[in-house]
Length: 462
Ligand code: F0G
Image 1 (cartoon, rainbow, N blue to C red):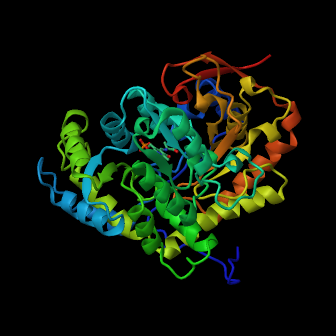
Image 2: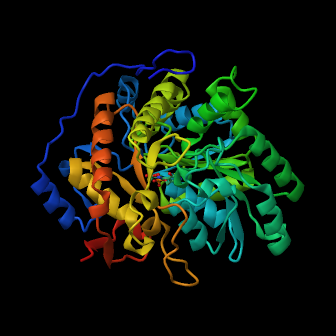
Image 3: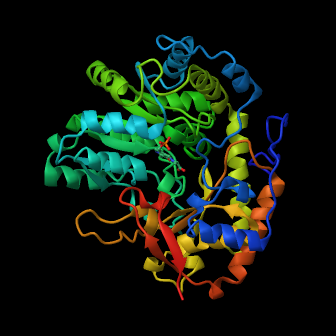
């Protein structure tokens, strides 16, 4: 598919090793999804053909990263790989202090416990499941301050990840700036469809935060992908490198949590980073209680090495052109087939609009969960519900949150699937779309207490 210059993009790598997949019959898939309680999280990977559950920890590492695994320094303390990682993060993200963690939520746990006091309010550009839960477990209340367009799957706004500063003003008027420990800012907002924020918006947010003496803590998970969109869509950035834009973003913020399993092309890893020494010392002390010593944070030395090397690959223009180009390829072909998807096409996934896809189902019949199960039955494709099940219950009312966005996420691991796989996905979704009026909803048969979408079980409605 051609880019703006009229050239097709292609992968900036060739394949050295392959992983064989098992093909299944429709009968096998019927049994598998029944046994999984119609929850794609509970399927066995061996029963899946094309796995689009997540881009988290599922990317293919390069030969250089694999070589880095052999350079693992597994000393309990002071591993050489920690210093390599620290150097890379200081160089590319620019934060002074680093605390490695086993993955993103480990960093969210540390940061939430350190910065949030019970009764505080934490504004963010849309919630993420684990992020909000850690805020709530620290006694905070999450407040959504993303622009309204983000909640409208049809809005073509180029920066649906932007923060609405007027919503922040209203929050300060209501609760006072001293009850806002930080602003939680995510790049390529996952739950909104992988939608970026603009640099102009971040600059406004930065000024606002300086006025109110509130720090900005970045969820850096997909911020390199966000930098790609700024370069592509925002005036004045076309001649800057992704690396320069990433640094500009980080310089406008005070620290970050990171799930390195996305942007950084590793199977496991994360970190907390910041510029404030006092906060760093607290995180460094707390990490030894919950994760591991502060020079490994629950990771093996080799994992930190793979992360440092992944970071250098992740900022390459040709890598992101192919990565985001493949997502776009899938999205454009689904749109051409008439399938309702979230616009504009985002960074890491295509989001099917399940309310539009299955308008005959009530939201409490879990249209997105139902559609994800149907897609698996159709072709062995595994996707993820991002709607009423993921949103959970309101802690105050106990009711399902019934979010505006009821989506199925087709998430692309980086450097894993081919264009032919994408064609198979398009055909499968189109064929489910054709028989959509026959599809019945689900009811929940088992509901766990925390992050219910991971482990809930369902059964088909009569
Ligand atoms: N923040 C964002 C924006 C995420 O997408 C994730 C994970 C996390 C934090 C938590 O990081 O999984 O390493 O503990 N997202 C995965 C996903 C699970 O499929 O979107 P983690």
